[in-house]
Structures are given as C-alpha cells and as structure tokens.
Length: 495
Ligand code: NAD
Image (cartoon, rainbow, N blue to C red):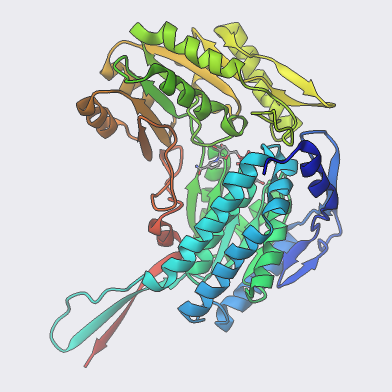
C-alpha cells in the first residue's frame, strides 16, 4: 500500500512522544528539572518538550543499571529467557512500525518511506539475530596439564554506556543494545540530542517485552553534559560510541581520566568510490555512485563522498552521476515524490553550506550547490557534485556528512589507491571494475573496514562493520560485536 502524505501526517498527528528520561523502569523528569525542545527539521516546528538530563540523572541511571546487573535478574537469566524477551521486543518494534518510522522521520528528517522499509524492519531483524545468537555462544576448554581443567567463558562485563548519533536514531540504538543486552549486560543509553524520541519509545517497548527494571535506561541530554558524564562515570564498565572522530577522541580521554573503562569507537568517514574504466555497466555504476552519497541526505558515516574515476571515462561518468543528482527531488520527508529530505538541523545545515561555499570557490559545481528553503525550513541542501577540486582541499578531504560529492580523476591503479588512502579516515571504500584480478588486487590493498566490489556500502547483520585509523576500531554487527560486550573469564580446576 502506498501511503500519501496525508496518511503519514495522520499517523504523526496521533503520536504522543515520550518526553522523560527512562530510568529503573520508569519515566522520570530530569533531576534538575530542565527541559529542551525537539524541533523537526522538515518544518522547523516543535515536536516535543523533553527532559534535558545532567550528570545527576546519569548517576541514577548507572546505579539502576548496576543494581539490576548485580541482582542477576538479567545477567544470570537463562539464555531462553533473554532470547524470548529480546524476540518479543523485536516483534513489538514491528507492531509499532508506523509510529517508530514516523518518529525518526520527524525527529531528524529522513524519508519516512526509508525509515519504514529500512531502519525499523532492520532494527527488528538485528535484534532477532542477537536474540538467536545467545544460546550459540560457546566457551572453550583449552589444553592444560593432566589433573587440571580450565573453562574459558564469555561473561557480560556489567554496565555498558552507549552514546549514539542522530543519522539512524533507532538503528544505531539497536546496533549497540542488541548485542550488549543479549550478552547479559545492563545499559545506559544516550541518544543524540537531535533525535531522542525513538530511543525513549524503545525503552518503553523493552519494558513491555519483559526486560527487567534498570536493565535498559535512556538518558536524553546534551553531549557535553550527559555524554561526558557517562564517559567519565567510575561505575560504567564499557563505553560504546558512534559519532564523530572528534568526540570519539574525548571518550578515550574520559576513560583514561576515570576508571579505564573499555572504549569502543565507530567514528567518521570520507569513503572513496573507485571507478575503473573497465566497468561492465557505466549507467548502473553511476546510479550506485549517486545513491552512495545522496541516500539519507548523505548523512551516512560510510557515504561514498569521494568519487575517484579513471580519467578516460571521467567526463561520461560524471555526466551520468550529475543526471542522477538532477533527478532527485528534495522535499518534505512525508512527500512520496521526495527522494531526499532535510538535514538534521540548522546548525548542521550551516556547516554543510560552508563546505558548499568552499566547493564553489575551489572547484566547479556540476550539480546542485545551493541551500533551499522548503515549507519554512532552510535545512534542505541540493544534491551536489563538485569537480576540479584538489585532493587536499577541505571539501575533498574532510567529512561533510551531507549530500556533497567530490570528484577526483585518476590515471593508474596505484594513483587511485594512494588517493583513497589520502584521508584521516578508513571506514569503507567501493570499487568498480569488470576485471576480476583487478577487483581482488585493489580490494586487497585498500586499508578500510569494508570494501564493496561492484556495489556500494555493502553491509549486513552477519558481517562486521567499522573502520581503521580515524574511523575508530570497534565493530558493530555480526557475532564479533559480542567481543565488545563480553570478557573472557578463565576458571581453572585442579582435580
Ligand atoms: P557527534 O560526535 O557530534 O555526536 C555523537 C554523540 O556524542 C551524540 O550523542 C552527542 O550528544 C555525543 N557528544 C557530543 N559531544 C560530546 C562530548 N563532548 N562528550 C560526550 N559526548 C558527546 O556526532 P553526530 O553529529 O551526532 O553524528 C555524525 C557523526 O557520526 C559523523 O562523524 C558520522 O560519520 C558518525 N557516524 C559513524 C558511524 C559508524 O558506524 N562509524 C555511524 C553513524 C555515524
């Protein structure tokens, strides 16, 4: 069934967002009583007035998490119980698909149809994956001297602090919560200040699914207060973060200055898409190249924001990408005709606009290049393609986190690889070629977390996702995510 804008609006009008922190199984006001307003970037209008927490709330949440962890109500619950509870939560997410999709769309501007077909079903599926994995994580019995046996088990680590960004509000929460909870930890989650609403609703659904009080706490608030308080808290055992490299570095400092909590970072990117002249299908590759930067308004950590194209096909290829960009309709995220919505907020749009200005000054704008005002909101940016940029110029090198593609031609394979590596980040790369040997040769040399060959931004629940260098070192998704949320414990028995 294709919904009209009026259909989505009717769902939005029926919502009553949760606006308090969720601590120890209850919605509560911030201790200091402060509130803040959540604004929809699609219209600039207020969505909700919600609790703005501080370190005092974080402390209550950590205490609740610690109590629940020590009580064993979840950490020592049977695998069957944990599996049933998380499976129920997965089902509840799908039962509330419309509400969660509309909530994320309103809160941060993504197309409601993407939230409805990708973010929310993806979140339910990932949760189910980890629920199913709980009783398949086995320990080891290593070789020991005769008369001895050693049992090596994966044990939960205790209280997990999770600090997440706004680009996939529900999904980022689930990427962290699903393996952390499946492993038996208790969690204090801080959603991004731009997009807190779905995480609060998720906490309520988790309680409905039977997750015991205190096992999942959600503390909305600002990064410098709530995020920092979680990072510095002496009773948080593990910190899992997705966000900018700049803030990721702060979490390493917070840990060093407090209790040496484990820190896992999934940070920014400036991923390259390498297109060789021997591609099988130029138009298909161009379509993917456009999708890889314009999907979700370019607010994707692994967005292919640098297009490296072999010089002999550069003009033709760029023309095909530009045609794709010009076909994109920017509009309200409920509008079925829109292919791109607004950026998350004015501050971020200002930042992206600054890069547009630099792009205009330093290169040639082949498509887009302007900020738009739609329905009273100026958070919209045209899908933009910039050519003739020096590889070391800011728009070609820095993470813009918006719909801005920098095009850089190359001549040889070695040059393409050197350009791809000319970045502080190493999250992902894509490469397009019709030559199997080249595909393997180049993929092997690209030092990034994920190489997509003849596709872009390949990612799935079964494969680890994360980067090297300034993109961090944690791995979300796959069974490897359990490495973050469990520790190896040896019990040695002499008999
Ligand atoms: P951000 O770093 O500004 O914020 C991320 C989170 O950190 C938010 O919850 C924020 O409140 C908190 N925070 C901000 N300042 C803080 C501080 N001083 N102390 C503690 N916490 C603080 O990032 P963002 O703008 O929300 O998200 C965009 C960034 O996230 C991009 O760099 C993007 O590449 C990255 N990202 C990475 C991945 C990945 O898996 N590698 C996925 C999505 C987004």
